[in-house]
Image (cartoon, rainbow, N blue to C red):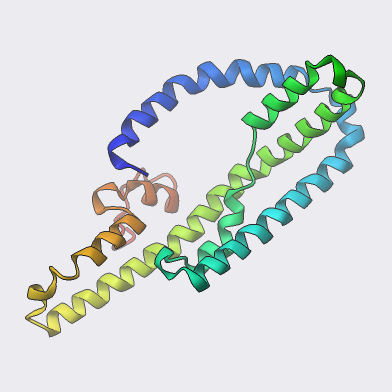
Amino acid sequence: HDARRRKCLMEALSFWTSIVLLPFFTLAGASLQLPGLTKVLPAALALVALRTLSNALGSASAGWLSEKYFHEARTTSATVQFTWMTLLAQAGVTLGLVLGLQSQPCFKRWSRQFGVLVLGVVMLNQMIGPILCRVGIQKILRVEVAAKRLEDGEESCSSSEDPLRGQRSVSRGHGSQLSDVTLGHRNNRSTYDTLLYPGTHGDVDINTGL
């Protein structure tokens, strides 16, 4: 979330992603027994459904408590409703634990079947997780951007009605900084635009939507 470090982080991720993930997922996929996966598919589907339900209940409960008792967090109703959609994707750590478990001789009797089950769960989560994550982020940001537009509209109206508003703007500077932290600075708004309007590469005006 630090705009000063964003460029360096993106460059590092772009460079190391293919180097690290390609051999890692190759080894994980090689250890996946497809014939065994068909046997544990019902159990994998049940675990995916249970995990999805747990994430939905947990995130909604935490969001509701934050909205009700921690007003400084500025939790919106869209955040409460859609945060769970961003929490479903999983891969790296889980696969690493499975591979480590299978390499232990003391777990040899059941580690292979258990590993196939866990890899099946990860595979299903990876199929639905990224899609739902993008949808959830778009829904949350759409509500926040609409709230920002409404706030800017109210401020412009009050500014035209009150010519002395400029003298009081200094005292409201702290509140404006909080708004910038919540929705991102206008100069860094391309991230929101790209998520809300895929394919525009940040060229969409956040005020007009064009």
